[in-house]
Length: 308
Image (cartoon, rainbow, N blue to C red; front, side, top):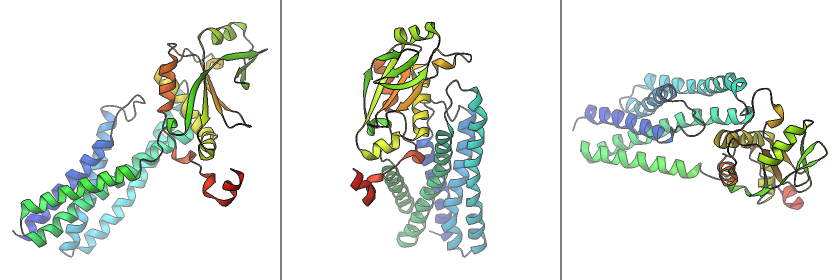
C-alpha cells in the first residue's frame, strides 16, 4: 500500500465521519431551528468544510506540508463567525415572535452551532489520524479505514456523553399544577404576583382557561439557575411554542409570565394556552433546555456551602 493511498483514504473517511457526526446533532424539532431545507443546507455545508479541515491536517503534516497545516489552523478560526451569524439571524427574528426567545436563549443557540462545527472537526481529525497511524503500522488500507471508523465513532460517543449534563428543566425542578387566583387586579400563583390585569374580561379568561405551574428547585444550584431571567424567558417561549397561546399582538396581558418567589426560590408561571391540556404543558416545560449561560453552581464554593 502506498502512502498516498492511505492519506487520501484518511482525508475522505475523516471528512465523512465529521460530516456524519454533525448530521447526528442537526435535528429540526418543535423550535423549527434550523429551518428546513435552507438551514440544513447552510449548516451541513459548514459541517463538511469543518470536517475537511480536520481530516486534512494530519495528512498534510505527514507529507511535511507545514504551510498547509498552518493555513488550516488559520481557516479553522473563521468558524467563530458562525456564532455571530446565528446570533444576528435570531435577533432579527425576535420582533416576529409573540413570545420572544430572549438574548440568553439566542446566545445559547449560537454557541451550540459554533461548537458543533468544532466537534465535527475534532471527530474528523481523530478519524483521519487513526487511518494514517494504522496505515503505517498495518500496511493494509481496509484495516486502516476500519481503525479510523472505530476511532471516529468512539470519540463522537465520548463527546456526546461528556457534554450531556443536566440539559433540561426537568432535571432541575419538580413541576406541579397550581390554581390561578386574583388579589383584586393582581394575577397570582401560589401567592406570587405575576402582573396587574385591569380588564375584567381578561381576568375571567385567565380563571376559565388559564393554567398555573409551580417549579420547585431540587437543590440550591437548581434554584440559582432557575432564578436567571434568560432561563425563565426560555421557559415561557418554549411552553408557548409547544402548547400554543391565545395571545394576539395587541393583548400584552396574555403574554406567558414566569416569576420567582424570592423567599423560597420557587418559580411560578401562568399561561392561557391555545388548548387547555395541563399534562402537555408540564411535559413541555420539563423539556425546555437548560441554557449554558444560566447555569449556576453556588455549592461548588465554600461560601455557597455555608449558605446551603
